[in-house]
Image 1 (cartoon, helix red, strand yellow):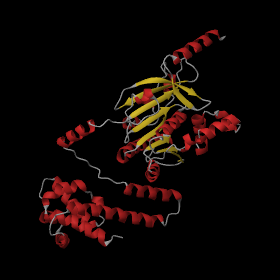
Image 2 (cartoon, one colour; image 1 turned 60 degrees about the horizontal axis):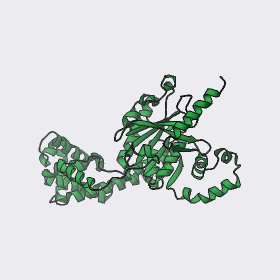
Image 3 (cartoon, rainbow, N blue to C red; image 1 turned 135 degrees about the vertical axis):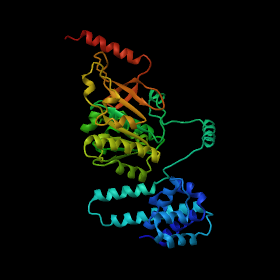
Image 4 (cartoon, rainbow, N blue to C red; image 1 turned 90 degrees about the horizontal axis):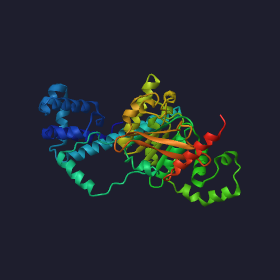
Length: 423
């Protein structure tokens, strides 16, 4: 139902345009057809856009020529509402606010009649989109850009930390980025993602959305990692008294982390976005991308759309989105098993959309320690590429950087063990 306030605001915007055609360019830049709930006024607005784009004058006469003589009374009514164009930006803001309210009320009416939770979730997601809408176009002159440059250079920029110095020196991550953490099964990417998410939760609100692992199992891993408790004994429920004491001691370390675990099985990008906005998450981890529901006729098209939507989600809403991804098994047959961008499964769009792509893998070299993992930066729009080694402690579900010379010693020990092991 369109209210009187909505109609007044829409009539006022069109009236300002007709009274002062010189504002046409700015007005069209700040508005769009969806801002008008009344079909007739939307037709008038579309005619104005058509005329302006074609370089023709925008006034009551030219618009009537496009829309037809039957719109004459409507145009006169609009001009009668606004004798001057003073305050036209205020009218636009009022119109857009009233339009949002109208659309929310329509969604509320539909929500009251839903028969399935999936239908309800979709409507709630649409409501989240309406509430978070922003003007889609931002135009900055060169003078404005230079002023912004001077202002930014005066302040030291702080990037988001991943908890690993060697990675932080390569990635200059910020809110609005889309990062992919790829790996093969059993490489430990979920454990690594949890560790990164918990570290970011010290300073940011983090949502960890899991599409395959229960929150109870994720909690087991977090307790093992954060409190240095044997993961096997946690799973068997055979923790020692010493380990219980350790958990009690480090309880605050876990509970004060600004991280929430969300079961997201069967969800799509829109479901995650609406929840992230409602819970005010600034960092979103998704485990993992290929399990998300997407639009499309086949899996390739679905994953392509998922990747595009995640990229848009990060940029539009200023979120750091970290999506885990599977790597194909093709690289295991190569002499050099190190993964490349082409090993991302099911769609090349992922490598196009991501601001950074990280790949976690096990070094196939027989002289490499069993707990050794490689983290390779395959794509990095802002920083440098490269790779470094991490030590994975499976018993405590944690990763650590090697100290100088530490990996060389571990590698030498492994090489000597292999030399003395019977074939």
